[in-house]
Image (cartoon, rainbow, N blue to C red; front, top):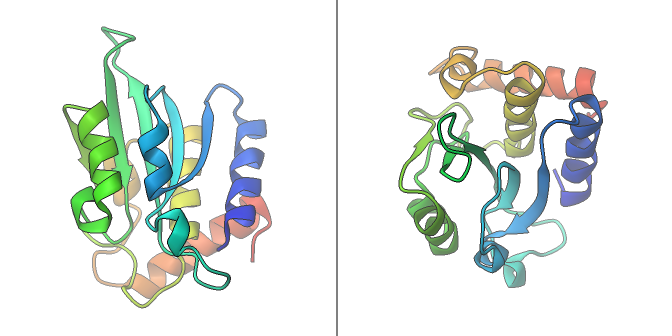
Length: 168
């Protein structure tokens, strides 16, 4: 999925649920320009800007930033990668962004997408939809997925994206 399709779908989600902030689509190195990670959705391509080429868009992940209930200024992060990689395994700039803004973050504990799949954008959009439109936690979302049947998982997210965002 290219950046235009991702951005269009996220904007549709924002129209459905205007209470959340969408901060934009970033390449890994562009994250370093963020001085204050405000609550909302950050769509991240794991490539640096110089590495993005036509037909080679890299891998999509999501950083969902929110304020804690007891302190608006304390920020926490849910890092969603359907391949279940740590930020430091993806790109040093993503790791720097996470480490510099959050003392703690949660992430996927197990892989839900095949390593050979190009459907990461669909997984990320499904995560955003379930989090924002249905107010589900990461653990509740992960229960929707098989730990072993990646094809079934891909069908699930593509069907959701087709129905919610008209994406094929």
